[in-house]
Amino acid sequence: MKYKTSVLLTSLSVAALAQILPAHAETVEQKTVERIDYICERGVVVPVTYIKTGDLPAFAVLDAEGKMVALQWHESLKKYVALDEQDSYRWAEKDGQAVLSHLEADHTAKEVTLLSACRADDSEE
Image (cartoon, rainbow, N blue to C red; front, side, top):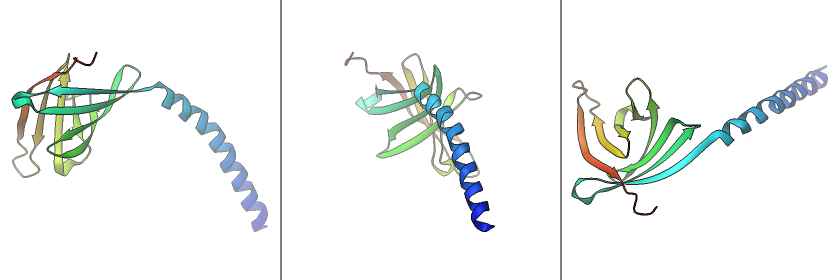
């Protein structure tokens, strides 16, 4: 009886995967990845890789202060927010202009601007 149950569960799992994988593949195909370097004050370069779903922002990965930071788009804030709440970087970008800030993880929860005059480097185009 255990063998039949195991085979049935395995068959159901395979059937479920067969349903999920094509849908997942369609989702992956719709995602676009774009890399943009931003030149900020004092010549600081911030490389950012955007992952979008269709035309909508979804995620970004940037290099800030010597570390890679993964961020997720927050529509209500109109900016990307770090996935790590304890090291909460913020990246606000619009029309090739961007600001990098950091939200303190203490009781003040004060957002501090790190780089404010960032612009997309379009010299490679």
